[in-house]
Amino acid sequence: MPTIINTPNAPAPIGPYSQSVMAGDLLFISGQIAIDPKTGNIEAKNAADETLQVMQNLEAILREAGLDFSHVVKTTIFLSDMSLFTIVNEVYGKFFTRNFPARETVAVKELPKKVNVEISIIAAKG
Image (cartoon, rainbow, N blue to C red; front, top):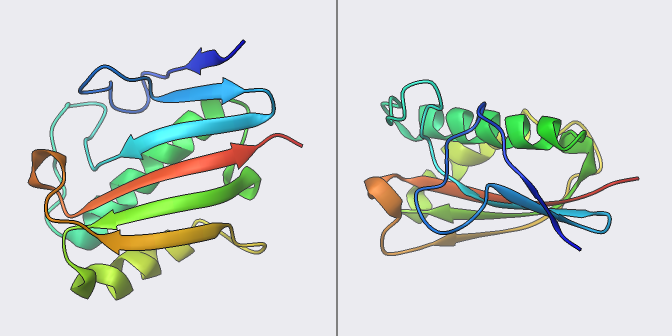
């Protein structure tokens, strides 16, 4: 049976979904945007700041599940514009040291709350 994993150290969902779900040895983390969990607001001023907040939110959820970025096997990055790829990639890359996860990055028409970056993750225990 899947286990719902939520933490107050990441933003509460803004819809009918969970922050993450553990199914067997796999953790599926819902797409995170740059909401500061302390204020509930988007404090980021640019795409680099957004990406940093997103990665911190993801890290908090991973930690709640007893995992870290070394357990991540797949990420999906959604951008408001592909011109942000290099900026986002630079910040994102600082959270992984080796054995990078599989990934796709796509530009979409619009993201929740008019942000520029959303990232989801799949991680594996063990």
